[in-house]
Length: 479
Image (cartoon, rainbow, N blue to C red; front, side, top):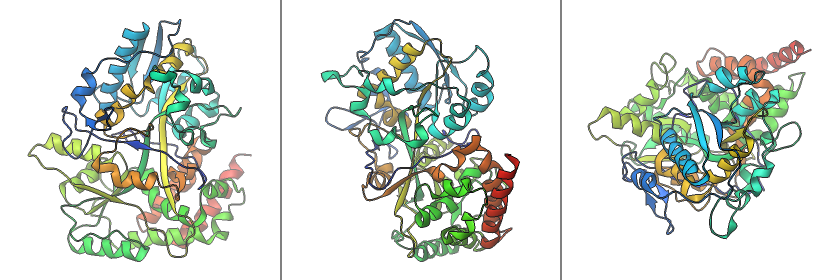
């Protein structure tokens, strides 16, 4: 899935307390109608996986809500030929067949929020329905007053037996989030895909693998990989990819929500008084200085370095749950039948850290404030929550879906087991830092300093000192 990197993600995350149970599931598939390549497919009634052809040829489910409006406009984060584009087109065709509603689609790609939607907010030419992860939508559209609440969608029927509603089939922990609320406290997105992240490796390449339990264990793995030819592949032109390292370790020291509070500290001193930030930066500095990042990591253009990992130039890749689908697609286009036996693991919790965290991020539907056909758009949101349509996310797109009964493919089982562990403290990517203040905090403060840290240009101490001073400077410019 190329959901996060065709454009520059300006936002990130939301937070869940440790006591909140996150129920997630999903699966993956090849794009050829089978379930090969380590992927899977949609769920049948017995929980097995199906392939894309079976999903695409399946009968359309009945609608739960039939709106009086007969059309709506959707501007998409996807392109038409992407897996998500293909499965959504089936859903639109079904909605036309069963509800009599025509969906007018513009397939715009990842930059559409800033390039298309935001500029249109002050005009009368706005779409009815949009999608992206909750953080990007919040920063680019919600904070500008461009969305309407979707709490009413939760009570809408999906068209399934027993009169199931959206609230019945999507776990509350995926939408009832602080970062999924507008200024009036209304939910602005209903999720249809869920992301997480991990270290990825090829089980057939990395022999005698033992999952690291400590930071020392992690560096032993990296030392062994470096000696064998290459440790970490990192697409250094993606700022938020680079920031994953420091945020992953910092969250384990400070917990969910703390980085947001540090960003909101107008003195900037929280970055220095909380020792966890320096300790996290020291881990990143060790990665930088230890020569673990493969040559050229900061000179390539995405997805060149990720593709080098798929080709075997490095043992490890830290990226989101879309990693297997992206690299599998790349290898498929290369031909030759090469495949990856995907394995994954999490950043280990440092010995002196107190938070056992895992990150997640929902992608969902939002309806614009000026929508001319909001009822039709909302009816479609409820319709796509139907199991027979929702299973397209795993069946075709090889990603995690929010419905817990959908099966999980081999590629994502290790990650999903962590994600559904009720003992884990759930934090949305980068603790929501890139969703704050229209994305300007990470753009002006975190990303430049973090890039310098990962490139070895500054020390860990200089990083936290810089975060403190640059945070204070940021707030001074805000008046």
